[in-house]
Amino acid sequence: MVKRKNKKTHYLNNKEFEGTIKNYLENPTKYESELVEKLDLLISNIIFTFKFKIDPDDAKQECFMLAFKILKNFDKERGSAFNYFTTVFVNNLKLMYTKNKKYKEKIIRYQELKDPDYIRPVIRNPVDPLKKL
Image (cartoon, rainbow, N blue to C red; front, side, top):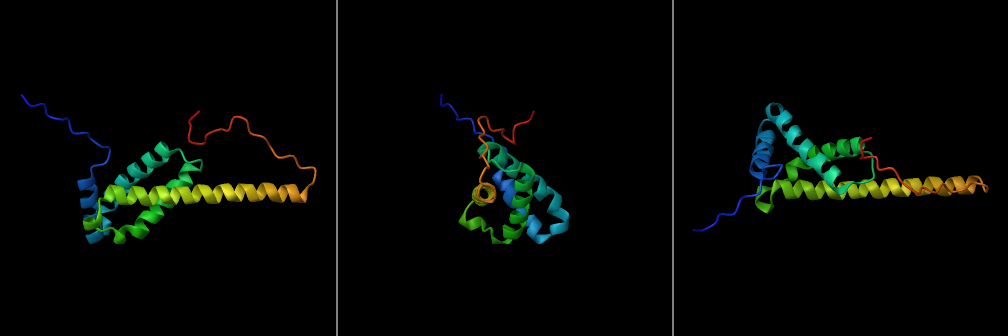
């Protein structure tokens, strides 16, 4: 008797996702809500999994804008939709995190230059904005 491996079910079916993208490109008004639903699931899971220290609402909005901007560039022959969009979103979130971090550092340096008595705040237990209270 041969044991069959259980197929792992993923939170986003790639074939359905690619089909939704194709349908959206052909008829945007009809398939927009379906595409937004799948993108929302993907973006939310990426933000939750990687725990970027950025505002989740801003990050989600940025990813949606980027998704609709690059949607026409997706080519099914070059790779799966899941991998393509995951890579694009993760790279964008890394960029957002880096910009945000540099901006905060610049603000602190400015405050130090402006006020010589300024004492840099020490955060011992940083609060993760993604954690719910």
